[in-house]
Image (cartoon, rainbow, N blue to C red):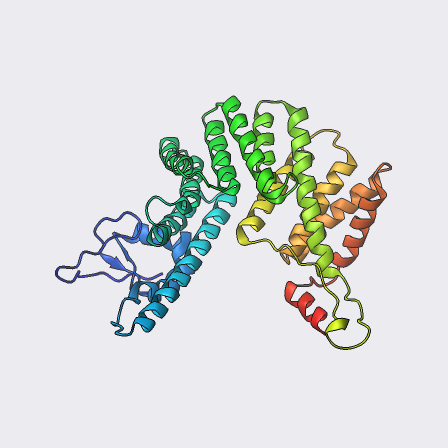
Length: 377
């Protein structure tokens, strides 16, 4: 990040990337982004600009030069749209990742960028703007700016209500954020009602035992935990752990599976492989936040069963293995193994899964690329 004081060209009004006030500083890396001062430049850099700095150059200079051919203009427009859609996905994923990491202030620039690109592509009233409003709403909740959060979520809710064919995935995320807002306001009854709606719509879209649905269970458990209704909270934390454990176990087994030797030659000899359900950056951050939170709660619970500790530790071990954090994977694998050795009632299947994982955790992690190359040989 570098500073470049400006002398604005006559007749050209340059605006700050974050606050839209007159700008006096230019990013010298891309030279297409401007700021009102050092503070906003630093905030934007830490939030999103470092990731998209060079990607902004073609988007903000694509209108030049003039192209006389209709075919060339169409090609340029298609390329610009492709770049804009990529930016929407990148900035939203980054914003959501920062929220899961608890970096609410840094999530705001990413969300603002995603909103700006969404408006450019879809217009001011499109349902496609709602995910950006939700990130801004959740960031505001995290920063304690509840009135601002209400405004963002009201805009999202209004857009959903006037879009009859709005999908369940967006409705789920809206109700989850409303649940978080009411929880922050101390209205636990309304929070639970909104989170129940979140779980319903997520289940309709993804199924009851999918990682997309697990977030609703997790936040509902947190509300019950704050109410000291520990039996319900415990059952929901267990369900979240089971969902992530199953998902991560599938990924690990696919990555560590030894390819079978095909018989014969040619396409007929090629054996189909299960497709890995990879995690994006936001899902990785969510898994770390959720599973570490549950693990900490379990460790602080008196007389927690070995089986419960084994499963949450195994889930974390697999997560860090997938993230190629070998040391942490081994750390949690050891905890899981200790729990296995301390238990006389653990299911044999889980015990065997943990024992097998301890073995592979001491080998170099197998990346998705390595798995693909093995399958192609």
